[in-house]
Length: 279
Length: 279
Image (tube, rainbow over all chains, first blue to last red; front, side):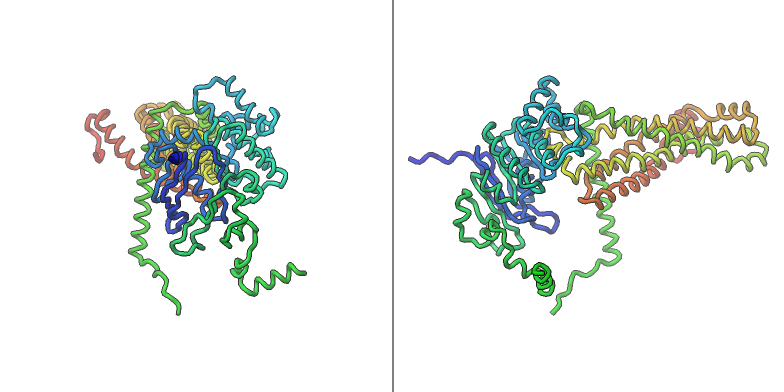
């Protein structure tokens, strides 16, 4: 007798999102099991960040439902939704550190907001989280404006981890970083997974990140380029299957080739561009 | 063959669109206000949020409000002296200037100045937080943006703008007295005796009551525009401008209705029905 499939931690059911006249997601279905590290890839504007913000309830779907641990997020009251959100950690694309607060206060923010910990306990957790992301005590009194891009990401990660989340959401964690810092962040994502029993969802363009951290890859495609009736999720499987896919659109993305997109540049401009590159 | 695009709306349709937008905006601000007040009365303000808001709204505004108040009083004295002196009533200038300052010009001009200094800066600050995802980060860390960002600013404006109005009134009274008694040689004893005879605590209270409502309007409009900012630098700039313009209009409209209401109350409770108010 086969064992029943485990209940997914996160389930997106026929999710539709529109901003005014602009449709971003149509009939997206996705189930994420506990412990998975799902990397969502796709072109800019295909709705990856929107998907992430729907999962944590920062955006509401136009239709469909986001189910987290058996609860439909759109049915929850403001206070219940806030409580559920504390089970998530979110590393924002721009780090989104509070610029009026120091690094220490940024990392301590979520802990203080819960109002059930003493300052001594908070200090211990903050220092531990900063150490986990490779930052010393010296950064604690600094304001975010004094930090480099990589340091901001690491402080953002420490802040997201402070409340021991069950689910970590990473929104383009390596965008805008140098290759070394990109690798540092990728390693940190792996370390977080080793040290904490988290489910992770990573939105990225970086194929290095995909191959390094993913246990499952989901590729979204922009609605504007999709044929009528096609599923917006072009690929859903383990990263090692990416190279075996027959879909030319998936291959184009993972190989990073412009191909027919160059035709979108008008002929004259295109030839001028090619001449310029050749010279 | 070229297809016809959507035709431009006619004047009536345009007027309808503008009216519908205005009604939607008013409804949105009303819902925002009710939600903010609910947070204010159901949960104590977050630790560490009140003092910075009070400092920025209160302490930092004292110089500009004092200068505004002083020049109101001085200009009134300069403009009125000739007419009153020609009638031999220069000593009555004290009552005229001081009633006008305390009831109307002090509260309205101080509030207008604060709408520019405080309201616009609140809108710009919250709009920047919105576009840099700091508002989303607050939600992810268990803090509700209305509770954490709006409630302290609302309390600061509602409680401190009446006090700042007292400063403006005091400076206006002293400015008017300085011009009349020192430059125009009006007898100080009679100037002050007339002021004391005609300006009552009711007049001062009326001005401060107006300032209380102006403060609420400035905070709610500034925060609403900031939290609903469009993305980008242009969106932030537009939020700040809209906050000032909308606050200024709100101050004038509120001033009109509060003047009618408070004068009716004065008629009923102080003059025992001997006055001639609308209500």
